Image (cartoon, rainbow, N blue to C red; front, side):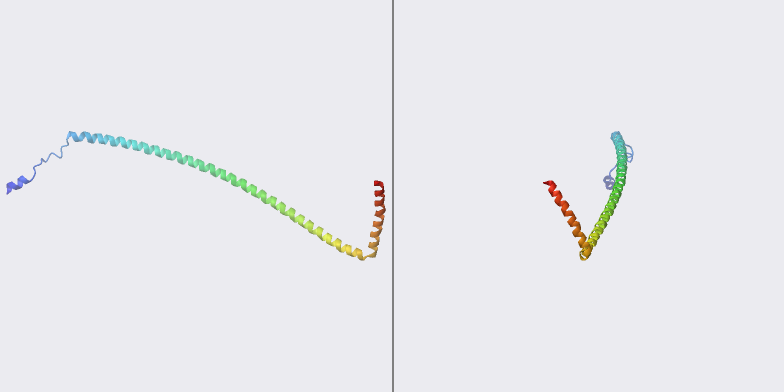
Length: 149
């Protein structure tokens, strides 16, 4: 049975796996060269993308600064215009208030004159004077009509 056991085990030289074959060395070397070349290309692309990103950020920062400056200027201009409008509205409000006060005063004066008219009608001296003034004005009017003819 000792013969059967030795026949069933394969006999493989022990030094075979340790010694590389020349066939296997050449493809591995070319693969390493390909991988190194591919790695270099990828690193170059990454550097290019990093540079593009940096340029893009720089341009974006510049645009943001420009827009902020423009918005600040617009805000200042708008504030000045709003202040001018407030001033103009205040002037209009004052003018309208003054006009309203003037109209109210005029209406009060008209009311006072209406009261004075009642007093004048009740006063016989004033009524006589009104008739005299009217009588004096009438001949003048008659003379003006005669001159027109």
